[in-house]
Image 1: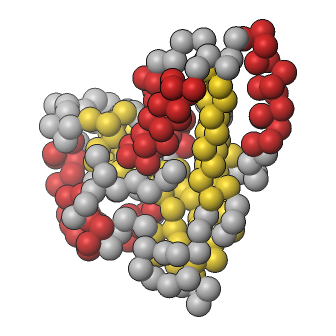
Image 2: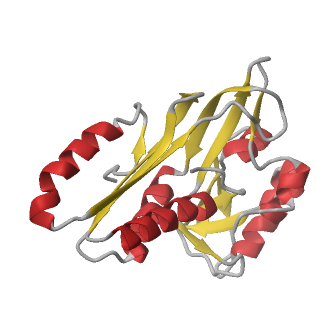
Length: 81
Length: 150
């Protein structure tokens, strides 16, 4: 199955893109997506522990099962307001 | 996606207050509380700030702010929120919240709840731009990464 991943702020600077597509096995969770992202983008390893996962614009645990077409967001510590 | 809460242009909070004033009598509002977040020159450690640059995960930020407004649960009240995107100079408004309610206690409480919620969970990030030309995202230094807002 295919999902998209959105990067923001210093993460998008580090990986030099604002988004990417991931191909995952059916039934994969955010944890598998996370592993794949770290393998593809080494700089993520320094920051991913402080990121939250969003799936389709809602915060979800990393263990969340993903489905075809999901939009993931890697949310580093927010600083708005 | 209908954009309600994010704004690329300078925030004209005074226009909103005028609009609220005209509705106050018919809505039974006895209190209007306003919070304005102003960009300051002091930084998170990098030097003297001349501007902030705000980036958002726009669809999610709109959704999360909408959820906060629902969770504030103020009966017979009106809430107006605008958060800037893009570059905001020192002294300009980065975020504005106006709550109109029957009584001041609920207006103050809701306003506080909303700004704290925005700071804690809405996917908006600010980049400090310093007078020496450097720029740095807030929340992305090693010491910041140990204090992730969740």
